[in-house]
Length: 369
Image (cartoon, rainbow, N blue to C red; front, side, top):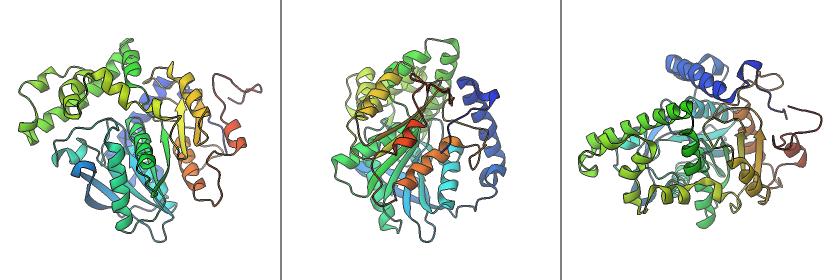
């Protein structure tokens, strides 16, 4: 097990986030499945399928199951991704498949090609949790093995946490663990944080641009589901949820919607093993969340938290020294998933593992970072 060490040129969280997205995201758009950094791994023989989520919502996905697969991973990409362009989720899937996992990447509600199949809006996990239970049941019927794990990044991490909650509440024995990196945890506070700085406002507008495109596509595909003039009113993330989401799901306000869907308030009660990898210098999320993140996970015997001083947002790129490659965050997620297959493995990782990744609020005396 290796501590996370950011390369000297990626020690700023904002810069690492932008540089990682630009370099790997751009490379992925040029090379697709044949990106050079995965050339040593076999290509995945993807199969496209239209799954059925909760409430009979159709969800498009790509899935594949290797011979003698040892388990199944359902992958939730980040807010600005989709099945075809989410380089981080596709990289995880490629690594997992080569390591014996069946994998599914799907377009969640109102995203990617699923947006062409149904006007039902996304709900930040409120209904996507049960969607993932339906996906797990269908995958097993199609020949994918148990156990099923839920993996996610950023907003997709929040969806995965809601999937664990749904599994516990519905006594779903198929879904047994989760692993998330840089999950969205508290939307009210983090959006306020973004809007407090010029760079944060630029990032918020980038997200808003994606959401406005989502609204425009819904208008084009399902004009009866969008009120006249609404797309023009979407000038922020909050206004998107105000006009496109909360009425459908019965929330009184955007603040109530964010409060009730935030993943932070699930962490102390989830009764399935899960791992969170989180960087203290994540430029997207309010840093005041970190003490509560530590408190809620430390009180839950099923929770595992790796909190690093550096790493940025959906990045955690390393030098690769002492690891299989530079994708430190992905490698730790897969190690955790593999650990859930070991008979008798306790819900919490070993004490040695936990101590190797101490909180940046209580740094190790010897200065491991």
